Length: 284
Image 1 (cartoon, helix red, strand yellow):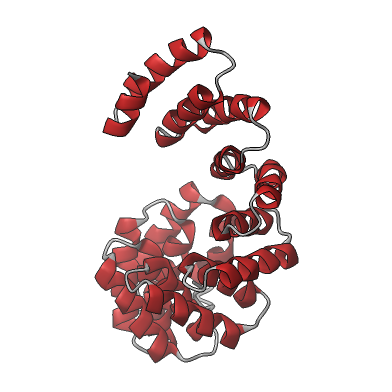
Image 2: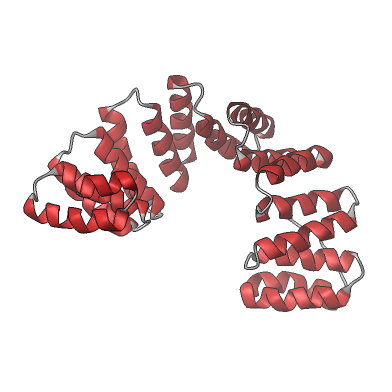
């Protein structure tokens, strides 16, 4: 019954049945694996980890189970624990591109960037169409100021997956860092055609507009971004600065008031600009 409920997407029913099954068959790795999956699909990652860990203890040589446990740790923000199990999964199944990709993501989350790059590259050597690895490697290269390399990888990711919104945003960011703001605007626009409600793309579009002197367009982009990400402090900070540049100090002060409630520390960076009318550059 639990397996059938999982297949139908009835994860709550599946969990109820599988918890009973796990008591009746405590040494069944398959039952605990399926229970871990059901919890994972409901974003109950701690319970998922417990179930997968039990499955791993029963079948320690299963690459798939190790991989599932590693992913559950990743989703719960525990990169170090994820690395342990994804390393084992990769040793058990070294020709699996997904294993190397996930291990790279875990290393990236743990700020072990050289190891992350190594495994992104390994995944691509095994599968040259693994678009997510192009994206992950590009993010590392961008952080290392290897901007042209990052741009090339992001274009490859988009070529392989034309609806990859995050890649368009990242490409806009990379191009913007070279001060090619008009090209950056084109990439942000592409992202927004795919996902009009993306606050990051909308905010960064505003930054690019301001950098080419299109203050009205920049202000409108920030205003829209603020409706999409009302609790994102950087958006309100940029909006306050855009209002200042437009000579609307009252609106800037209103944004400062909102920002104080969202991020008091970030609000301090705009205080002097508003009350001393000193302008600083907006950021993405």
